[in-house]
Length: 390
Image (cartoon, rainbow, N blue to C red):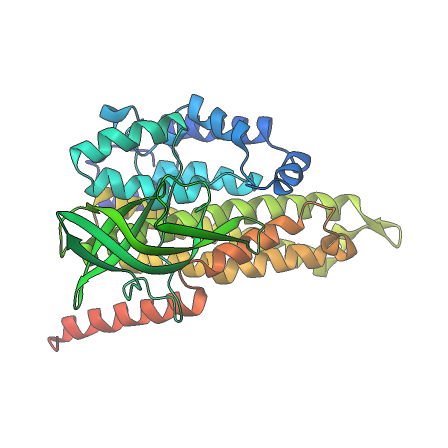
């Protein structure tokens, strides 16, 4: 946001204007997504085997937007999560089939934060150039608790070996490396970097709600690289998940913003009983709810992203942003579909994709109920500390 990092917290909390650099990033990403991708292009890519728009991926790499939140010493732009969220919002508006969120939020950010000098030098420049897709295996079987990882890790002959399986890994079919937590001892987890170019790892891809390919991965004595230090995985995983949740919220904001714009245009042009639909009071009220809901989603998103970039505790803000993107995001796209009438149910008409994308994003790493439960725990813990109980 506008203003230097050393300004007061109160000033920054109230100023949500973009800086000149942030506006330039927004304009550039908008030009790329709108200029390279359109609904016909999206539909064409969705019919391919890998569902990956290499053309737009290359355009993002040429503009160095794949390095927006990566260190300058490795060729990145050196910005933070907030700037990444600006680009992810524009990605959500275009629903382009590129693995932007898994590569940057799930893969590159953890490597940049916890990786060794050698790991960073080997992998991050390839990400920035567009030659390397990354992803993260954080979703789990059952209640989907990332801290109860189903992967086991042990040291054999000076090499970390992983066994187990993980569901719903986005872009697993394209990724060169997968970041994943694994249990090293009882009640201890660590982060690992898993190369995908070996026969001990198998990927079974399936089409998801928004037509992306996610993979179930199975590891059988698979070699892996430690990311960070042994035993620090829980803290590192929390660091990663807070940024992934925020990135998911950014993508959802973009989807809802574009869907609301399409709804406003449609109801203004579509006529019933001799006048536009938008002249009906009930339509106007629901349209206003969509606009207000999307703006509120964006507000809590920026609050979470700014606090993470500034080094403030942000657990509550992150859960709040993810809850709004899940619950209110669903309300927005449902209203958009309804206000489109029969056209909203026509899969040849593009507005349905935003409904599918927000539904997919809603359930990644826990939907609204899960976020609300975790938020309640955080508030209860804070109350106990304040009362001197804990």
